[in-house]
Length: 306
Image (cartoon, one colour):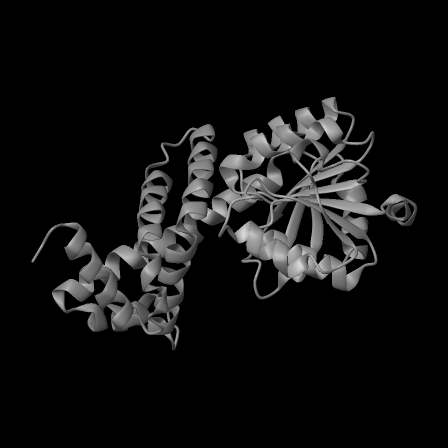
C-alpha cells in the first residue's frame, strides 16, 4: 500500500523555508527525484532567511516558488508544513484552498495537542489526510535522519512513505491525535528550560565572579567533561533561535495548562527565550567567558549603567 501511495506522489509542497524547511528541501532533492513547490510568508522580504534559502535552491529545475499562499499546494500530493509555532494554523489556513483531494498534509511544527487537533479538523474538512509529526531532536546535524514521531489515524500509513522519502527515523507512535505533540511539548519543558536556566544562572554567576565554581559543581549532579562548551552551546541556541523557541514554549504552556497544571516554568522559559533573542549580536563569541561578558556588557548598556 505504501509503495502504491508513494508512486502517486510527484510534487511536494514545503510550507516554511526556515532552518528546518531548507534542510528538508535539500535532503529531498538529494534523496528523491520528486519536484518541490515552496512557499514562505517571508518571500519578498529583503534580507529574510526565506529569501536567502530560496536563493540557494533556485538553480534546481525541480524546485518552483509558489506565486502566493493560495497556490502553494496546487498539484501537490503531499504538503509538509514547517513554520514557526504561532504560524502553524494561519499557514495551513492560507494554503488549504489549493489542497488536492486525499493529499497528505504533514505538520512538523512544535505546537500543542489542541492545535494539532484543530489542524486535523481543517485538513479533513478540505478533503486531505492529516498527520501530526514531532521532530524529537534539533534538525542539525541529523537533518531528515532526525527522530520523528507520527500521530493520528493516518500515521501508520505515512510512516513507510516517509521512510521511502528519506526520513529514516520516522515512527508512528499513536493513532490518537495529540500524543506525538504531547511527547514533544513535555520534552521541551526540559530542553528549552535547560537553555533558559543555564543562561540565567551563568550570566548572574559571571557577574558575581563565581561562574567557574558553579560550572565545576554541576559535575556532581550532571557529570560531563565539557560543561563550558555545553553551556556555550545551550546559551547560543537561545540567542540564535530565541523568538522561535519562545513561540514553542507558549504552545508548551498551553499543553501543560490543558493537563490541569499551572505552567509557571514554561511561561517563564518563554520570557527568557524571547529575551535571549535580543543578544544575537554576541553570537560571534565562540567561547563561554567572552560570550557571558559580552552579554552582560550589553545588559549594562540596556539598563543605562555607566
